[in-house]
Image (cartoon, rainbow, N blue to C red):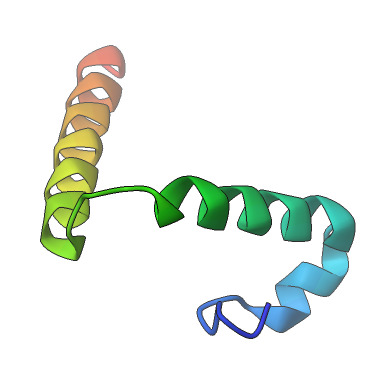
Length: 61
């Protein structure tokens, strides 16, 4: 948990802490073997967000 300063601690107390810790540990394990750079990850995330927005806006007509 100390490695994840971005976590809103007060929000975490309202959730199931065990599930959140498990999810963070799983995410760390998966990311530890990744060869993607932070820039690569941002690019992928931006693409996902753009496509999600397009789908959302297209479905609301």
